[in-house]
Length: 77
Length: 181
Image 1 (cartoon, chains in turn purple, orange):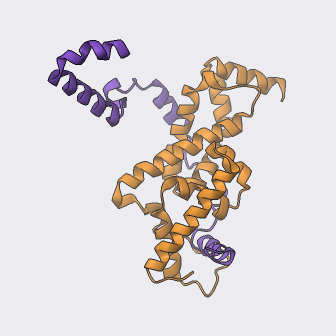
Image 2 (cartoon, one colour; image 1 turned 60 degrees about the horizontal axis):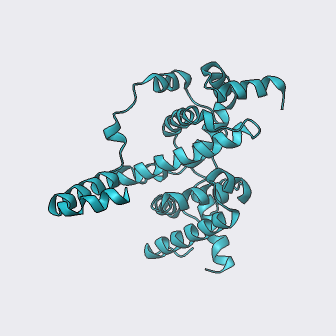
Image 3 (cartoon, one colour; image 1 turned 90 degrees about the vertical axis):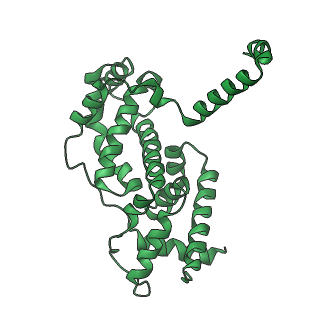
């Protein structure tokens, strides 16, 4: 993509999406923030990423299939 | 920095909610305006602003009072807005919500029809969020690369690269739709 193409696509993008105008929230957001601050913490289970669950399940399956590897795993932990 | 403001920042760092509210009142408009530039929908911008200030409060102990609160808050808000765009991206229906009906520009180019503007906006909505945000801030909002880099927590070179990749992908998408920019 040459400079002319780049300038043209930038111009097109500005045409399609004009810059936003200065604005402020339509409502007072402080009550929502306070509510968020005082909300009980989300259950730990829900905050664990999916990848960690997959890793844990994989590790558990591996140990179940090959229990002899437990001392090796413990050594590296 | 004034003594009063410095004291508020120190108290905020210690977890004082009153100091946090003072900072929120001082900076909410700037943070909301920044977020709106990224998510481009007022209701989503409000949600992200709440999320951003919640993250700011959670991270209070990590704030260095010698640095600018506004810049720090802006970085956190940028990441919250990016997360919002990513989560919307997973919901295909709302993928292009923010870009479905772009407002008409103040001085429209007569060669660019409403259909082309609409297709450009939709194609832009299909870009990966991290590229989209860089292009929005640097190209659409015409902010200095340095400011965009600070907000995204990346180098100026990385911002330029993301903008270039965004424009290239946008051009390819439009070409596939038969639009030659």
